[in-house]
Image (cartoon, rainbow, N blue to C red; front, side):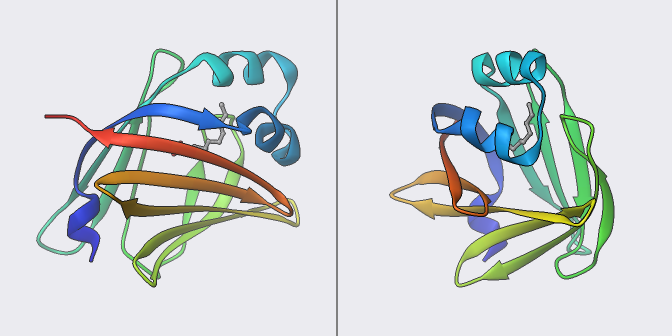
Length: 134
Ligand code: DKA
């Protein structure tokens, strides 16, 4: 199931991301940069089932390595320190981040060969679309 996510993905569109960043508490200056940034997401998985998500952009490069269902500490691009767990739910790769009594989910799924990332904080949802690089 994870195999379909493996590859290098380039973001082509982003909707409602400013509202999402506000909802998770990102400050004005970082939101300005976040709104302008079009990251690449590089997804790999090794023989032991360790998954790596590397987000590369001119703003910041972040990388997390994890196994499904095993919680780990994450430092996000906006510098939150989160307790994170990633699960597969009905074909979606669901990244649940918890910090300061708050919780957000990033749900990624493959639709028509594109990777759709839904960033969800309460009733605020941002939708970011990625296409696979050749
Ligand atoms: C994605 O993979 C979602 C990334 C969510 C990042 C939230 C914080 C960004 C702060 C600039 O496209």
